[in-house]
Image (cartoon, rainbow, N blue to C red):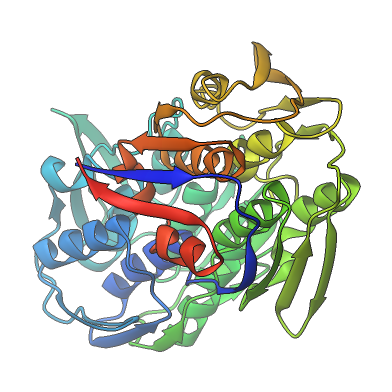
Length: 417
């Protein structure tokens, strides 16, 4: 098992290019089930979750080739409508194959999903939506079994904003008979990216990026060529890396409009941010100011940036309150940040962070994907040596992060334990 070894105290400087979005790539890959033939998906990051999705699609009968960041998915030969536990258990997004398989074959059998241990993320809204579209759903022996001769359009109002649920039902409804309206839909940029792909395939989807999405079902979809949007969470992580190390970094290929909430908070903390032609320059202040944040559904402050922002507040001047309103178990990084000498107390879904003059390197253990990133950020800012174990979480969502950081001047190495 690999670990990262960081010698902190280096100010990051230079340029870094952002990879394609993991959270956009996964549903786009799944959408190819609906478009039999050769699909070409570009700007795909090399990540463990991408490989897991490829294995799931191959198990269904797809033929997949990769060449650099271009992935060719020939979905014409998909014939199997079952996604088994051994593949689905490691990644929650695997459940998204349920709706497209049901839409294409009239039946599907998919294992209940796994993923990061950051709290309960039930798929009841996914299943309730499929039932509204006319599917018969049964849960047996850890599997979801669904049947429908052809899905039919419906009006679906989500109890809570759900990214996965919105993506899932948007795909399922693309070839349903009649109109489907998704109300209280999630508004994340990744949903708009998926809608663009589906529309290129021949779907009729309006309103993606708003809380009301209208889908006019069509009889069939066709293969596409498409380039995935940049990863806004990776971009945000590098912005904080520049700020926490006192650095000056240019971030290439990101879309700053996808990170307005984070950018506003960083500017409030004293970070200088300028952008031009999708190049964003992040320059740290002499002293960071403490800022309160509350995670919210997009366009609010992203839960996937909460752990990284907490690491930043550990070295800011003053005290900040960080409230997590999306997941109920997403403070697992706190105990590890305390090992650096951070001053953090938690109560319920809030953490109070009092800035310290300096963090001190320590052996720590990653607990989930974004917690891994927060520990790297703390290690970059800390004195002496930090060793981070269990970084397999990191490889699920960041493409070559240690190489990119080293390119900015960080002293960071991946070592086999």
